Length: 477
Figure 1 (cartoon, rainbow, N blue to C red):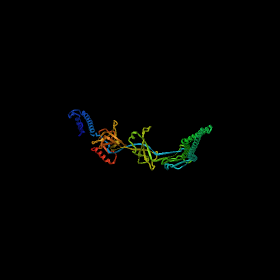
Figure 2 (figure 1 turned 45 degrees about the vertical axis):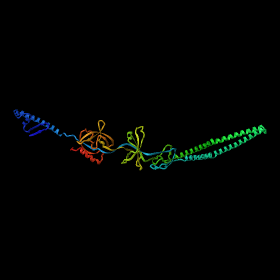
Figure 3 (figure 1 turned 90 degrees about the horizontal axis):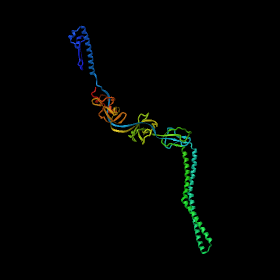
Figure 4 (figure 1 turned 180 degrees about the horizontal axis):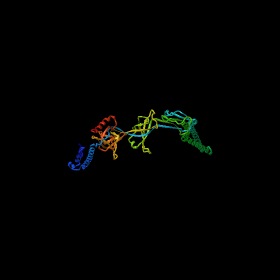
């Protein structure tokens, strides 16, 4: 005998492989009715009943098996417990290293190069002579003007110390003589008037005395005006004339000396000679660059940032500079924040200063800069990979509950780094957050945490996060 049973539909069929009557009975015919039929009919009925029973049994067994073997869907995910710690905002950008100072020395005169005193790569000091140009004609002009200047100085001394005092002294003597003559003429005039009244002299003698008095008075007035003019105007004018001639001679001399000094190019800064395109004997025209000096003791990385980013920076902020060929980042600091926007790009230029005492870094090198911005000391952090984009544009995370069910939570984020994100609201320190495998999961999905860690990626907290993940997935086998 064979028995087929399905708990779902209660179907039960029994039969033997050799008893056809049992099949007829299972088909709804009792034994007596079947026995009264012709033998040929009984065979057909037996075959039909067997086929119906086989089909019904297969359908019943298939439905029962499907209902019993459909499993519950469980998704494997990786999760992490949030960590609390300091997190600093990082502002990044690309830049090119520039020297702290640069001087491209050009010739101010046209002349052949007389001699180079330095080679490319030489370290120089401020004021050191680097190049001399041919200057014999300029030296001759300077000597000529020096002689004229010395002569002008002597003339000035003579005019102010000898000529002007002598002229004033002569004018004073003339004035005294004129005063004496005037007094004498007045005395003669008075005496002759007395004699004329007494009748002792003729009239023409009195007239002669009057004429002499008038002449003496005129001579005195002239001498007085001349002496006063010398004191008031003449001495000052003579001094100004002499001073002007001296100043003119001095200017010509200084001009000649300046032209001669242009034949000697000196470094205005401490630094390194980075370019020297010419050689001794070559002709240099005015304005041609002859030698370039750069101060590379410190380098400046100039980057352009948006105004919103710059608002979070200040001079003195620490920075790290990643340079090609250097494994470790080089420390630096913000040395300048431009007070105005760039009119072309509407960005703000920020300078990061890097010390380079050994000269290992080269000007013109492209670098990547990371500046540490604002810092949150006790920030709740989760892996950046845990953030999911919601349908309404909000940010969400998947949190694993104690029943191993993942639930969507809307979160508010603060500082965002490439690997870590500060959570301001939506997650508590005791939660376990899905950081891998949560994309596309529906709220309420059953999950199995296959690996867990802390939100900061540190090994010390990994054990705690693993324990949390194990508790979250406990009971799941």
